[in-house]
Image (tube, rainbow, N blue to C red; front, side, top):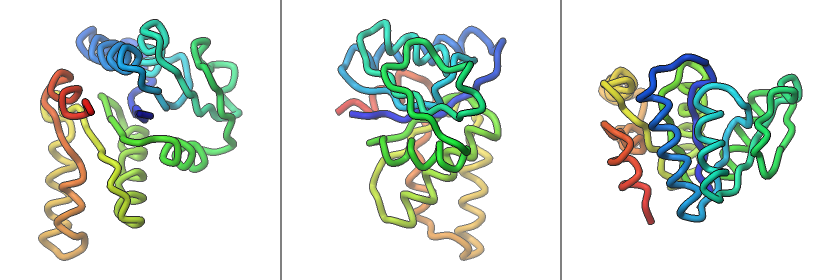
Length: 175
């Protein structure tokens, strides 16, 4: 299974956040899965890629040309792209399911892109979000409000599966 992971590239995040990225990466590698991610050796991307590679998993990095000097050394495959739009498209095409760990507006952009693509093409690829301390609750509320106003189908929000901790997220994605 190819698992796209969206997450923060920021340094200095709390240890519990980094530990969850390592836990997910280790699970991906130990179970013979492939990581598909943004390809950089920064923040949580670094943690999940290193853990996946150390556990024997394949690591596919989708790396913007402008950041090629920061690509992760453990990437099994590097796919160079020219734009963030192309990066999201390549990640979506190369994943069987999506996971979002802690992240900022870049992670949110990737999640929303995957959600829009999966909804538009009626593609049942699951999207799982680590909802640590309610990080993604406002997103769930916004989608519910859009459904209430008939701006979005109520089913759209159900495509996002929120999990309070990394163990419940991993359990949900286990085949």
